[in-house]
Length: 235
Image (cartoon, rainbow, N blue to C red):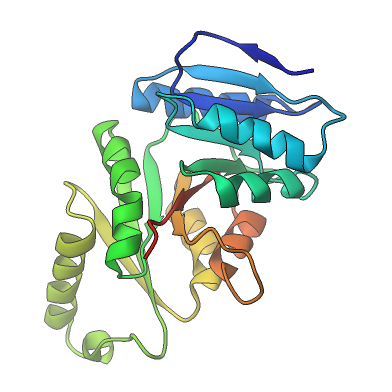
């Protein structure tokens, strides 16, 4: 049997399991304060199958006015959060095992792959974070095919490229860009730690089949802060 507490309209859905509620509720409260909303609690029965539990979470997430859901992201909860994240049309925030819980969201790491799809996916969340006073650190990781000519050249070319990247993909006041090379999966959690980010907001395709979503898998495994997974629009 499920217990839902709080008002009829809420902004953030906190999904509670049989134990370990504080990381989820605490993170939900922080997000709700930043967004100017409230928290609605959904406690899942211990005997629900992952499929049925995910269906219940999805129905609650899609209630009018709900902007995101917060779930445990540890290994035990993986059958649930993977189903929810793959099916939800709204962002889902995962709390990795042992994550540091922010008292407020002062800095958000925003990995962007340099495509219009990823920029469009995170635009609403990024604007909400910025309005709430959070600093946005945009991370772009080059691979062997996308590394630009300026990478080994003079600083002026790099500064111009960075300004153009931000103007195109994250034109919000105060946003700054961090560049790395290699595989994104290797860098997201490390940069979040180095930047002392309070949250990672990551656009993704909602596909976990073989060879896809390496950055998502590794980030949820390695991150020490909550991870917001934002569905990319189709196309």
